[in-house]
Amino acid sequence: MPEPQGKLVFTSDLHFVEFLYDPRILRITSNERGGGTDEENRGAMAGTLALCGRYTVDVGGSFSGNTVKGASFLNWIGDVRTTNELKMVVEGNRMIENFRALGAKVTIIWGRVR
Image 1 (cartoon, rainbow, N blue to C red):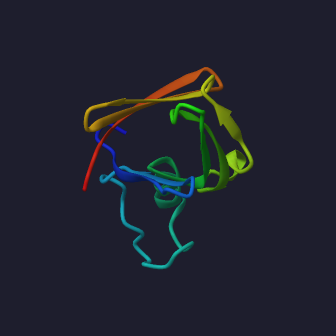
Image 2 (cartoon, rainbow, N blue to C red; image 1 turned 90 degrees about the vertical axis):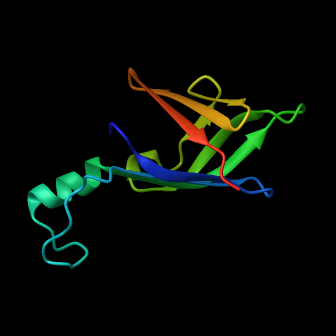
């Protein structure tokens, strides 16, 4: 995704929600969820990512990992990610998320919204 849109939310009770989407995704012509063509469904699957779960912090208050409880990519449900796979670095009003899995590396730069 060259210019993804989305949100990442951390709650004070240690839950998180992450949603990313490619704004260029084709709309579903039938206007029915699950009623798209193969091309439309492939685009929707490849161009969106949603996950939620619980996160942990260490004694110093730094992010130490998360557990995925729900995801648009069902294979991730139940995954436990430590700082070996997922690093979050806060720099001012930005947070840089680096995720590594199956040989791929993804970097997302989030901006703080109030």
